Amino acid sequence: MCDILRGKVALVTGASRGIGRACAVALAEWGATVAVHYRQNEREAQKTLSALAGEGHFLLQGDVADPEVCRKLVAETVEKTGRLDVLVNNAGIYEPLPFSEPSYDRWQSAWQRMFAVNFFSAVNLSYHAVAVMRRQGNGKIIFIASRAGIRGEANHSHYAASKGAMVVLARSMAVELARENIQVYAVAPGWVATDMAAEPLKERGDSIIAQIPVGRVAEPEDVAKAVRFLASPDADYLTGITLDVNGGSYIR
Image (cartoon, rainbow, N blue to C red; front, side, top):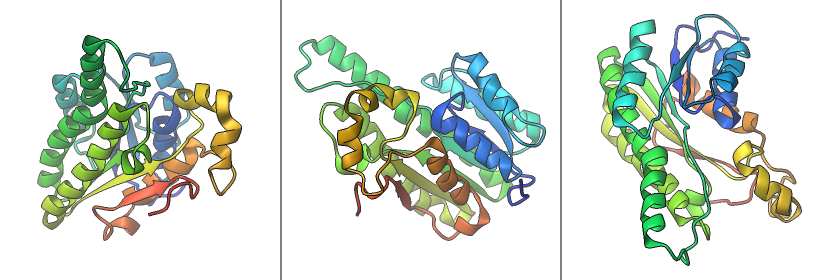
């Protein structure tokens, strides 16, 4: 454990497992106080909380698809700690949805839910976080996007579109907020060994790995280390960038 982020407060959404949990652990290792958000699995969220180095960490619960929950998450973080230095917009969902989907009602519902959770939650959380960071005179917002949102991928265009929108949002916010000492970034992972990816990795893991030059899928910690770097002062001049964490499977 080191003290690079000592005195900083980070809110990580979707932190009960996977990338979110790894981000919470990594930020705490560098001294940050972490607000661990979860939607419904308190047991797993408690596991994240117990894995964090240091003291003062706490849980926050709610469905980020609800704009009022987004407001409350930021307000509760500030109420408990007096500040918010790092927002990691990680909460997200994934499901396949080919354009051959026969039900238009299901099509509409799937697109709306995907954007509500993956994109508009990040928009709403960032809106409230920016207000706090402006008062402080500094802050960092990090969006967990996806390789799918950069290159486009078949059979889940709604997921790819929601992640691509995050990348453009990060760039736009970075330009707008730079003079206020608020940095904004995106991280775009490829395949990551999480519960969300477990089924396709089990079904076609060999073919997936064959497309990754480093020869393996990412661990959540690989993504978390990139997030932690962006949260640190070392990344202050890099605002607006998207870090690709994909093992060389897509190089721009």
